[in-house]
Length: 72
Image (cartoon, rainbow, N blue to C red; front, side, top):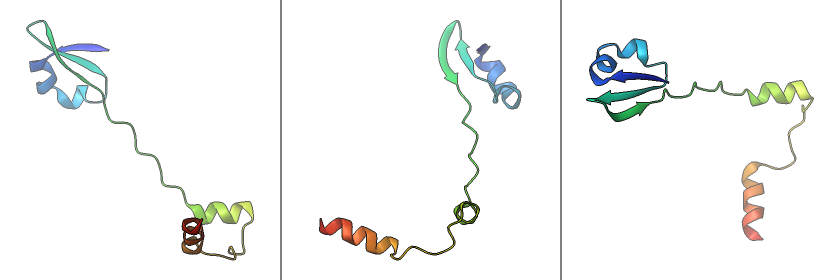
């Protein structure tokens, strides 16, 4: 983990924004920078169902399933 001064971190933010680092000012830790995790690709559920072999729809809907669960 890199250690940077506040001035260096603000001045060169695009270069340091992809790495974890500790930001110090006058020898004291002011904060730490941790980049956000990368976004996960959305899953195409219909394509996966076709690949697995689910071609017929289920005999009930999601709303009917939830309604039956609330009655219990």
